[in-house]
Image (cartoon, rainbow, N blue to C red; front, side, top):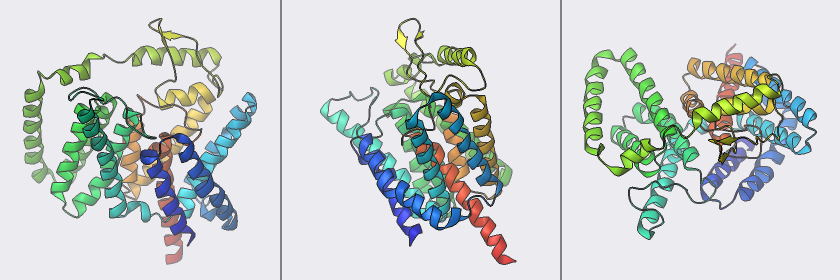
Length: 379
């Protein structure tokens, strides 16, 4: 019964990112329906087998390390953040059935809900004049207002759902999903970060297909390349297409240099502290909110040790996902590639990084635990 409960609670939690008007409701849902019951059940089930494998122990070491920067900062709020992140990861991994997150209904619904969210609001915005047709829809409604995170999540969901579509030969739905995703990030949201993720995902699919089915794949890749060239030729003179690249690198290179420089000044080992804010300006005029890079943020705020531990946990997770042929591994890989250009603190209140990084990593951990238990029961 607990597995069904936490599955339903997590669905409500994820939907709150799209439907709720403020982060407060998202936080309250997590605290009341996931964190507190999760703590009770994890104690009752004595860890739910989370620490019987190397990946679970790596997660434990990674999360416990954050007690050091918390103690250095003397920030009681950060201790709470560590606890809630820990509970989220371990509840997903230990108290929810791994098959729930891999069901055809879940993976298809995740993609189409996000797609409807983006296109539904874009249609409304175009109709009411909030944004002109062809201009960038720069802000979405409700909790998931950041268009960059929304576009990242859309492509992660596409990566997750594609194996199900291919397995069940839903080629029309799969093709429509790819086209809608590309149009969403290139025309509607105009987020170049997601285009990097698209390139990574399509290249991974192409390499896998060529490896498994070389004769059948080559003609299809040629056909898609021709269609892509035709599409680019048709839009090459469009204003929105030029605007997509007119923003330069959005100061990402300068931002990277500034934030890594601040990290170096504070000390590589422990970083600048969890509450650090730089007073430097981009091009001498623009304040810096955060590093826009999940890896730099990890090192800047909590030091090189946390970054190394994070890389170890992510590498172990991706290796296990590949070994178990888990599509959540591709979801996570896509997220990490795109969050190299847009991402901040991983340890904090529930935010967009939870469904983009913590959720897939925890789901893979849950599959590892399930696989281990099945092997033991077979002997």
